[in-house]
Amino acid sequence: MNGRLGYFSIILVSVVMGLMLALQFKVTNTADSSATRQNEVLALELKQIRQDRDDLSYENHDLRLKLDNALRGQTSANDALLEELTKARASAGLLPAKGPGVIVTLNDSLKTLQVGEDPNQYLIHDKDLLTVVNELRGAGAEAISINGQRLMANSEIRCAGTTILVNVTKIAPPFVITAVGDPDLMESSLKIKGGIVEYLEIWGIQVKIDKFKDGKVVQVPGYNGTISFKYAEPIKEGH
Image 1 (tube, rainbow, N blue to C red):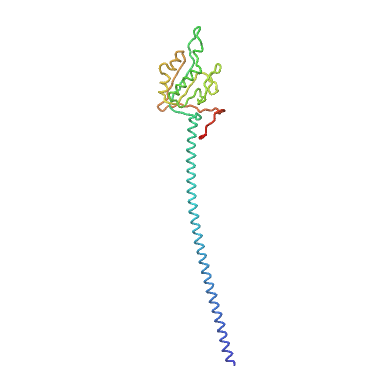
Image 2 (cartoon, rainbow, N blue to C red; image 1 turned 120 degrees about the horizontal axis):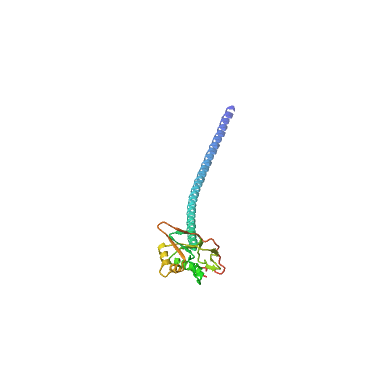
């Protein structure tokens, strides 16, 4: 009886141990499989993250290139616009100018008046200045000033009583007319036979012409007044 009990006890223990070993093996295999699958999932996620990182890096680089190109384009456009604005301001006479040219100095006559002579004939008038300026412009002068007053398209040279006004500023002799342009051509235009210089010298008006060339330059100031239009307005394209 004791022998059988021992035998069955051994068998029972063996079965229990076998079941325990089988269960442990299954659990181990399951854990290993689960860990393997988890590792595979993590590896795939890591690969995707790296791919996303590379894509974002490429996109960031591409955007930086586009931004740099846009900024360079904007800078170029701004530079071109600024250059055109400077040219327009220079053409309008708003900026100082320098270059080869002439300085024409006019002063009233020093002749002693005879009885019955009109003293006004021996003085410089606004029309004389206008004639000189028009001759200089006709000879290609690109910038002109009279006694430091820059002449614009709408500048006036006119008498106001006993004085002459240029840009609403009173000026008095000697009148110094500075012009940037071809010195020889402007001098020839003024001294042409029967021209303004010959006419003024008939009345004893003092005329002096100094030429500046071969590296020597004259300087003409920019217009320093205000510009306003009450009636004129630009016409927009298509209107």
